[in-house]
Length: 549
Image (cartoon, rainbow, N blue to C red; front, side, top):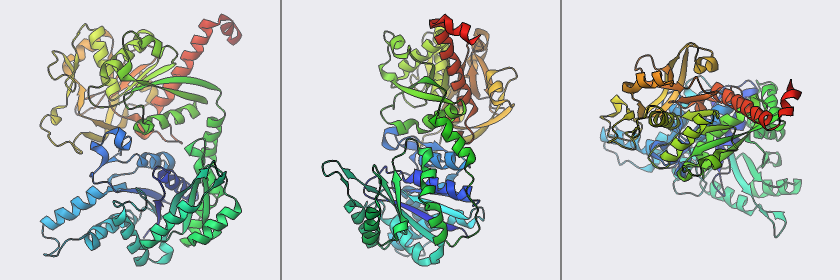
């Protein structure tokens, strides 16, 4: 049976429980232990698939097609392993399971209650991954903040597990905030004391307190927190703000977070952490040799978490290219024919982001047109690929009213249409084309060059697709379909061979990019942007070209 580490949060949300959990998991993994992480979210939605990105950030999709919390993206990026349906559980899923059992008569006429029936189901899910024999340690992140009404059943389940399991099989890590008051010029521990008090009142006592702080914790402050929160002083961990989330594992290693956990869990079979490759990536992030500006065209740009995986994929690709990738957010709703050139003029590359609905679509199409005509490196993901298809249909094929039936069900030229198997679907939750599907790339294409393999596998989340009735028209006019699903003939990749770098993909490559294995499309896109900016520099200053020669 695996041992368990639980990560809770207090004082405020968005402190970074997912990053702390992923960092701890990375350190334990680097010491030779088999680790995975799971997230328990307190909201009633069965999964975040139907949530607007403004509500909860991006919806992360796993290999097996689960629509999950964005923290699972951090888990995969840090650990370089896949998560699954079992790694993300919501209150909605817990209640759905219990209610279904009640309808089937599984409780033999008993009154179904939060305790024990809901908490029993929570405990069963918490322990599930640990019974597979695949892992030594399961890290469980409890979403929300201690004191929230929604979180109470999870805290109660944790209390019961602490009582039921051997003492050396569980560790509770509590992440809290130590705010700095500028007027008083000091850090304040009272919010943390209250947070621990609330947690203790529910019967759960933390073994380790991780303190998010803008300033260094002095030994006196650590002693004070330890004294009033009833933990050992060495178990008060400083989590100072870092320039990049990828520095957090090293910071936690310096604080000995992993060693404290291993001691409490009575695990002695481990070695010194091997983080050489991780440190090499960090060095490249800190000391880039060049810089490019990539335009991210989207409609949720006010919330960075809406495109979290894309932004992190650029970090990974930038490090491999030893290049700082500066993201310039451009709201597609505000792009017009009059200002498109001005908004995109200083870019070295353009990515049109995924999304749903008609808002901002025309701005995305204008941006694609600019990239195509000005030979600006272009990359379209999911809806971004569909916008490239619509733009090409309108401005090259001459189908002026071409559109997607998602935005215009009466379009005379539906170059993007609802997938056949989706036409009878009425339920919205978990019904899209989800998870990993294979794709065959064609010889001589940019896609084949990027992947360097014939069959690839990528993750999907969509309902609409390229309409194959128009396939010949596109091919004859110069837009090739360089990747298809062998079984369904779904067009997965489109590109323009006449363009220096122009590729659109129906899937979501950003979901498979990790620190140690950056996604090849992002790597090659950043490389193309570097070449574009170098070319621009030589045009502006011909002397540079002679110097290069």
